[in-house]
Amino acid sequence: MDVTRETFEASLEALDAAITDPHFAFWSFDLEFTGLSADRSTKFDLYDTLPERWRKVHACVSQFTVLQYGVCCFAFDPRSRRWTVRPFNFWLFPDASRGSTETFSCQASSLGFLSSCDFDFNKCVSQGVPFTSPSAARRAEARRARAEQRPPIVPSNERDVDFVKQLAEDVGSWLAKSPSSDDATDDALTLAPVNGFLRALTYQTLESTDFGLPPGSGPGFVAATVRENGGPPRIRLTRATPESAARARAEEDAARAEAERLRRGFSVVIQKLGDSGIPAVGHNGMFDACYTLEKFLRETDGSLDAARAAFDERFGCPYYDTKLLAQTFLDAYATAGSLRPAAARDGDAPAVETALPLDTALGPLYETLTECALPCMMASENKSAAAAAEALAPGPSPSRRRGRGRPAGAGRAAGPSSAAVICAPQPARGAGDRVLD
Image: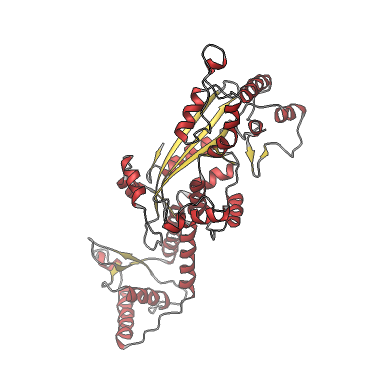
C-alpha cells in the first residue's frame, strides 16, 4: 500500500487488520532519510566506544529528517505453512503547518542517491504524511506555555488607544442594529485589515468588552480570521445566539484537536506497531532505530543509556537485526558446511566452499541464503515443529508476544489443552527464541 496524506486514514485500518491477525508473526521496517553524516566530527572511527558511536549517530539524526518509512507485516499460518505479507510504503514530510518549528536539512550525497533511485521529491513534499518530532512538540509546548503566561496587551500610545475606542464603537453600533433579512451585511461585520499586533489587540478587545449587552448574555457574535481572494487577513464577526456561539467554540476546539492529531500523523503508526508486542526486524538498523526513536517516540540527550531506556520503554516489542545475527552465526554455519548449495550437501554435486568471512550486506546475504540449503539445525527444528503444529488444535500462534515479551496466556489459569499449545515446540518463526537457542 503506497500511503500518502490522502490515503493515511485508510492505511491505519489496513494496518489494524494486519496487527490483529492471529497469525501475525513479525514485522520489518526500513527508512529513507536526508542524511547520514552531519560533519567530520560524526565520521565513524574503528576505535569508537559504544557511547561515542551512538552519540555520533544521534548528532546526525537530530540534524536530518525522514522521507519514507517502509513497514512489512508477516503472518504465518502453521496449518497451511503459508505466509501472508502486507507491505506499506509511507511517504513522510515534517509538519509544515503554520507555527511549526520543524526544519528540513539534507546532505547532498543522500539526496543524490535518492534521486538516482528515482525518488519522487515532489510527491514527498506535497503528499507526504505529516509528523511532529518529539523535539518540535517540546518547543511548541514551551511556546504555548509562554503565550498563556503573557500579560494582557496594554495600549501605550494614543494611536492604539484610539484604535480600541473606535473598534468598540463600530462593533457596538453593529450589534445595536436590528438584523435585516434584505441586507446580508447586517448579519456580518468584516473589519479593516491590520497588522499582527493590532489583530491580537482586536481579539483581546472583543473578548473583554460587553459592547452594551446585558451581563451574561454572551458576546452576540462569533469572530474568525478570513482571507478573501488572496488578500490580507481580516477579522469577520457573525451574529450568533449564545447557543450557536457555544457550538462554534466547541467546533473550533474539535478542529484544533483534529489538527493536533494530524500533526502527530505517522507517529500513530509506530505506536500501534510498538504496542502490539510483535517482534520487529531490521537490517543494519542503527540509524533506522535512532531515527524511529528521535523522530517518532521520544527526544533523548544523545547518551546511550538514555536511548536504551527510552527505546525499551516506548518501542514495546523485541527487535532483531539480521546484520547482527548474520555476523554472529553465519560464519559458524559456513565452517560446519551448512551453508553450501543443497545439491552439494545431497552428494549430487561437488561441494563449493563458502568464502569466509561471509558478506553480510543485504544483497549478498540474501543471495547466499537463497542459493544454499537451510542450515541443518534450522531445518531439523522446522521439520519437527511442523509435525507438532499439525497435531495441535487450531489457535493463535503462541509465539505472539505482548508487553515485555511474555507469550500470550502466560500468567493466566489455563486448561490442559491451552497449556499444551503454549509449551509445544513451534516452527522457527515469530519471536525467534527456538532458532537463537
